[in-house]
Length: 201
Image 1 (tube, rainbow, N blue to C red):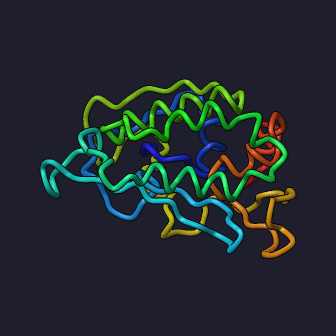
Image 2 (cartoon, rainbow, N blue to C red; image 1 turned 135 degrees about the vertical axis):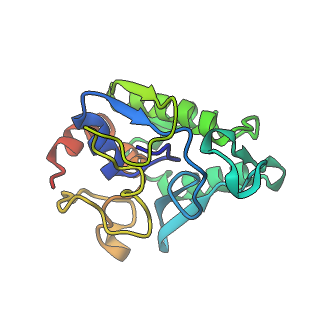
């Protein structure tokens, strides 16, 4: 799998189901993916949050070497958007302190930032996947289910069934499936893992 920023319910479903997850760190950084973006549910509907990045080695930059452009203070905008979207959710106040710590502008490396954030999300959701990092880039890995380029904003989800739950703005826009895992976490709290168990292919 690729590294991802506040990844989708689909991403977490696969994390739960696999015996071992290999996260790719040697791929050349691709644009417009969940590696530096997520989608939350705002009062206007789907809202993408994008971390601005720079590639030290240009188009040959490996994902593990991509840097975050903190001078743009993206972290302030992201946290304000998350707070505005989920302050009225049942579990926002319960989880906010541990997540707000990531929005200080102190993280410089995108891969390490996302990995650290993922580990916090594992703790909050109760999911405990066996995560390993790749040691080199393999274009077509054998005996592995390759999802590095399958879970992306540009494609339809690989899963077909996302059970509905009450979202903060459901009365305005209806149920929006497969958003960032924080949508489920803030709305379902300790039932998030049970929800992911009911997601289906």
